[in-house]
Length: 349
Image (cartoon, rainbow, N blue to C red; front, side, top):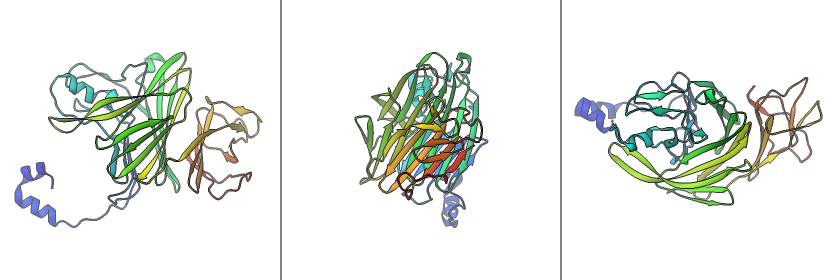
């Protein structure tokens, strides 16, 4: 029992709690749709990987502007973290931790999609939409969007593909007209250090390593100092990174993350050309994108459709893979070069 529980219920309850039998749950990943919390979990072991994604209603004044936020644990150690709360006082720190930029989410044109008038009152709200979750054999999928910029004609959606056990692809979609600036925020655990070289972002903690690859052309990275509060009235500095992209019309930002223990290495990730099977034309990035990921002997192709594409008995071709779903993952580790692959896993139709 934690300290607050012991304080509330006493020594006898603490001893009784300690004597309760412990059992591992009969599930690993979990979809808690009512609250908008989703957990992609490798196992219940202490050194397991875990990604938490949130896209739920704001609820009460306690809540933060954290739609589309992710937390990431690799090898049992924090990598991406929530900033915490620290205080209920009506001061700048309260808003820094509670606001959108205090979370691992996205904003458009430097404008928050949630605003607060004081420590408790939320003025600008954003409806969560498009939430879905799928668990498969090779990979798992979760997505969610919000209408925080709909008055400006912009729809924001985040898709996450987890290729088990250690590769994560985050695809942020911005459906818009005109030119806008899109930003992703990454808040790292204070125990680690962050370095950047040629677009590869590396985080090294006490026992783990994590690698972030930004595949979208034109993305710029900026490192800055942030704040994290794990306990009330206590704060410490941490490293944050802001990824920015200016784009006309529809924009897609693709980030590939992998990691593990201190000996882990970055996967190879690259964008592939895509084709329509029946129309014999090259498809553009506003329609579909595909990513090839190589991790040692493991090789995968991920197809990400951004629009309706299947005009007839159609398929998207990426590399030697033929996909007919909105989001597909192909394990091509055993597929020979030039051999067609139809056996992908559809994560979203």
